[in-house]
Image (cartoon, rainbow, N blue to C red; front, side, top):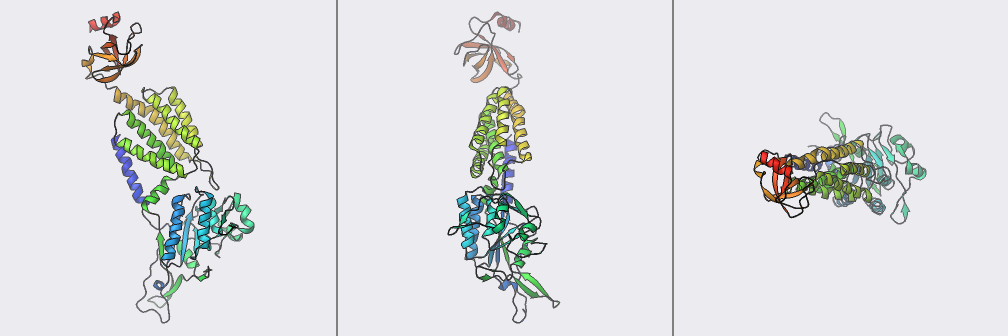
Amino acid sequence: MRRLAIALISAALALAGGLGLATPSAGATTTSTAPPTDPPAGGQVAADLKPVDVLQVSGLFDSVIVNAIHQAIHDSEGRGSQALILQMNTTGAVVSPDEMSDLLTAIAESPLPIGIWVGPSSSARAYGLPAQLFAVADVTAMVPGSRIGHIGDPLPYGDGQVVTFGESTEALQSGSMSFKEARAAGVLKLETGDEGVPTMRNMVLALDGVTAKGVTLDTVVDVLQDDGDSQPTSTLVRFTGIGLVDQLMHTVASTAMAYLLFVIGLALLIFEFFTAGVGIAGTVGAVCVILGCYGLAELPARPWAVVLLLLSMLMFAIDVQVGVPRFWTGAGITTFIIASWFLYEPIPGNDMRLSWITLIVGIVGAMLTYIVGMPSMVRTRFATPTIGREWMIGSEGEAVDPIDPDGIAVVGAARWRARTNRATPIAAGDGLRVVAIDGVTLEVEPLEGAARDYRERRAKS
C-alpha cells in the first residue's frame, strides 16, 4: 500500500508539473519576427508593431479563471499591448452572477480592445454565463464547428446596462447556435467567410484594420523576402497562462476531480485508521480530502449529497472493522450510488452530471475496496496466521467485554477476538485461558469453572 501511495504522490506531482506548462494550444502560433537587415524605405516591420496578448481559458469559469481574466486585462494594459484575446472553451460558470457581472463590466469598460475566440478545435464551446461575454467584447470569432448558447438570464453590467444579442437573445437563452448560425444572426463581430477563424494566427491577422474603442488595430505588416516578394507577417503574439498553483486549483475544481479526490481521500483515511498508524496513506488521504473539499466548495455540490457520501463511508467502516461485508456494506453502496448520481446541481449550459466513466470508476472502485480490499486487509492486519502463535495456547488473559459467546480479550498485551462455549460465558474483567486457536479467533475458557469440553480438549492436546 505504501508503494501505491508513493505512486499516487508521484502522479500528482507529474500532473501538477504538466498543468504548469503554458504552451500554445493546437492551431495557435507564437510569432516573433525580427526586423530585416535592410527594411524597405518607408516600410514597417513586425517588430515595430505592438504585441497582442492571448489568454487561454478552458473549463468551467470558477474564481481562478475569473481572477485570471481580470489580471490579464490589467497586465495587458500596463504592458502596452494592442489587444487582449481570450481563447475560450467552456461549458458554464460556477461563480455567482454578481462575479460574472463584474467581469462583464471590466471587459466593457477596459480601454484595451478585447476579443474572444472560441477554439482551438471544432469541439470548442461557449456555453452558459461565459457566453454573455460575447455581447461586451470588441471582437468575437469562432472556429467552424464550435457552438455558442445556453446563456441563461441576461446579466446586468456597467451603468445599468443588460446583456443583449438583439433578436437572437431569446434563442441563445435556452438553445445554441453553430458558427454559421451565429454569423448569420449577427452574434459575431468579426466578418469572416465560411471558413471562419480556424487558428489563432488567423484571428490575429483578421484584427488588422479593426477599429475598437477608438483604436485601429495594426497587426499585420508585409515583410520583404530575399526573393523580392513580400510576405504578410503578424505582430508578436504573447501567450499567457495561469500559474502552477492556480492551474492546480482550477483542475481540482472540476466535477470529476473534486469527486474522485474526495472519495479516494476518505478511503485512504479509513485504510490508515484500520492499520493503526499514521503513514503515507493517511497523509495522501488528508491532502486529497482537503483538495476535494475545495473543489466541492467551488462547484454547485448539493450539501445533502455530500453528507450521504460521508454516511456511506461510515457504513462501509462498520463492516470493515469486522472484516466481513454484511448489511452495512450493502447500505453503504446504495447510499454511495445515490449521492454520486445527484452530487451536483445543474447550471446554465451544463447539467453537471458526472460522466459515466467517472461514475464507473468511483462506484466500482468503492465496491472493490469495501467488499474485497479493506476486509482482506483488516483480516490480515488484525488476524495473523496461526503459525507462530502456538505459544498462546495455555496463556492467560482478561476479558475486555463480556464474551458470550464472542467478545474481545487481552492476551499478551494485545487485543484479540475471542470465543467461549455458550454454557460458560466470561464476564468483563474476568480472567481467561487460551485453549485453542481457530483461524483468526482465540478459543478461551474461564480460569475458574471452565466448561468440561474445553478441559477435555486441552487434556487431549
